[in-house]
Image (tube, rainbow, N blue to C red; front, side, top):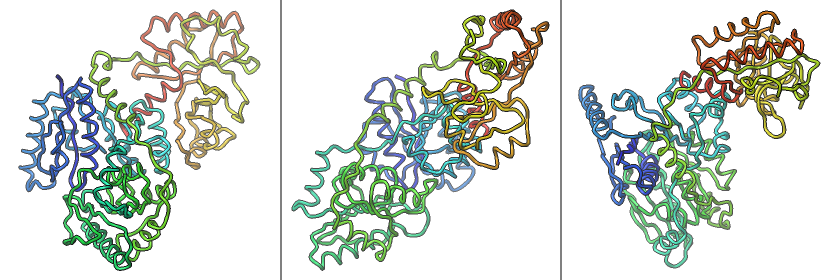
Length: 555
């Protein structure tokens, strides 16, 4: 059985490991691939009960010298070469160390990308760090992704490039029975249950986040106990916690590690948590009132994310100190259970497993495509494409796009090109030196995603860049060719020049100077030439896919 290797980045958190184990165990259950996890965790507690094979290596940032780091990299490369993976799965964001490993050079590679803040993902894309992956599976719903504040260029790349796919959130989904059992253990008499967790306990920055969070909550628990408030607290500090000692109390239980943390969070009445993906997802499966306490984060933008979550699901955002948290915890204990909860789903994990299986079907996924041509046949202004007998066009040109010079519809002042939704929303519009009458955002809101531009224009550049749009409008350079009745080889030569050194091209063929008879003869000649060439006539979405793919690969 071939190996599927999971490369996990880890240092001070458990999120990467939890996500990888969920996926690896699903791959193992499917039975077609053997998952192997290569990890860099300081603690192995999450691996103790997992059936998946694990190779755990020391953290790279602890390597004391360049010589030893080179040795470590060589060891990792030899290990990967011996495992001979059929597919490699990386987690969270690209890692330059993996990119340079010779053993990975020819492997199918998938990035399972967690939620990243807008600036971080934009920088990753601009550096070209995403170029090394066959697929990038975003572990979010599309609506959640759009709320992160990504740039227009990133939104356009994700929407149009075939490298990306939204699979949805990947997190542990505890069963109701598990939540009931763990609640009964920690609150046997039915007292309100407050769960406090700051992730795995490591600090992103040396600011003592964990120490401040837990000691503030310890003082709050003492104050409530003095008032005979029945609430009980469970502190799950995480194995990386390095703060001061936290003493148990009659209403405080302290656990360094709780393997049933997902069920405990789902069972809580109040969850005081760092809003990382795992803890937050697990808490949202239950009815706990949320008190979110952001920490310094790496590429997560936790402050902004916590504010959005608190508004959408209900809850509050505080700081890791008693002054901030005590009124929030007291208020949360007095409020009814949160009604807006998240039902556990398995679709995201199933989508990732399907993608891994598809990537290992090499004879199906490895292919060379023919050169692509978007051929726009521009009819005279007096002719409506809907009325023109396009069925009389040669069959070789049946995939050409037929428009007329000027078309007014749905407030779009430029002619629409390409397929649209059932309401007729265009994918692209044809422009020249003058910008359209509408603003870029107005066009994007109508469904326009590209501008087929036949002449470079400073006016269009100012119009486009002066009004940033989301998603960004992709400019597709095109060559406008005027059909000459006595010279059909002219258009053939112009298209051939475009495709000589490129994989795709766009030609706008102006047929205004042709009569009905000469048009038929002219297009028959063009169709016969196309049939003899390694050319595939495509629509706007296919051209956009290739161009945005380069955009992703090269930044």
